[in-house]
Image (cartoon, rainbow, N blue to C red; front, side):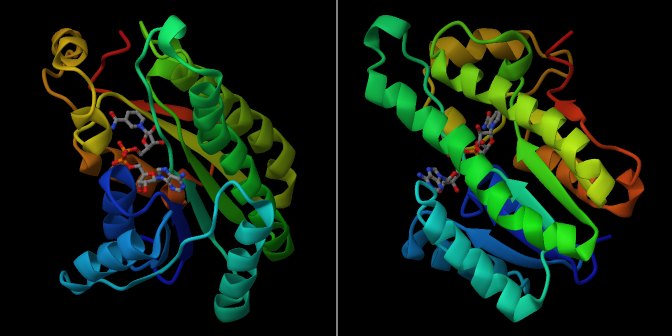
Length: 245
Ligand code: NAD
């Protein structure tokens, strides 16, 4: 479904990002993983290699626009194009507002929102020049109805939806589609860190009766990245087992 498409996946070293890298590579894409450290990027590439899947990687500092631009320039020099960007790197928090420091709030916004803007901004000129491209953002079900503690995280994901819908409008005339996937609770390290007291009652609210697997989210990204979705833009696709209803 993605034969020879050049794809960048941020936060591609584990969890939803790694599963998306795997799914896209299985579908013929040339996958480039962005991670925060050389060690984790190399490990993720090795994992895919052991499954006979190819990927390459970079570890730009997502706080630094110049570092991102340098990585993008290298990729364009090597591949000549970038077809798909998956903005997936993200962190969460679940502390009450009194216990959340200003620095912790900033950290979440910096990665989940500002870095998404930086990577997208660095890639758009290439996609515009091509006359086509797909940008996919990782939102969250908390962007629909908030969460009981950890206000920075839903705040950041509401912003992700705003960026998705606005850029979909701005970039549609250039042939670039922009969509997001809003996962429900998904079985990754991010969820393993959350207190059981927070997760157990949430599972009870999921009509399909289970938490999501990274593959559930990767398959949604695959659909939105593929030519099956050529008339879909500005969408925030909820993949949450019906938890929203
Ligand atoms: P994860 O913690 O397993 O993976 C997060 C990824 O982000 C990792 O690859 C990590 O290296 C990368 N990352 C973290 N800090 C970084 C930094 N400073 N610079 C660059 N990369 C950094 O989590 P996940 O569950 O796979 O989350 C992936 C995305 O899915 C996130 O945007 C998250 O908000 C979203 N999401 C997850 C869930 C869930 O329940 N797991 C639900 C909704 C949305």
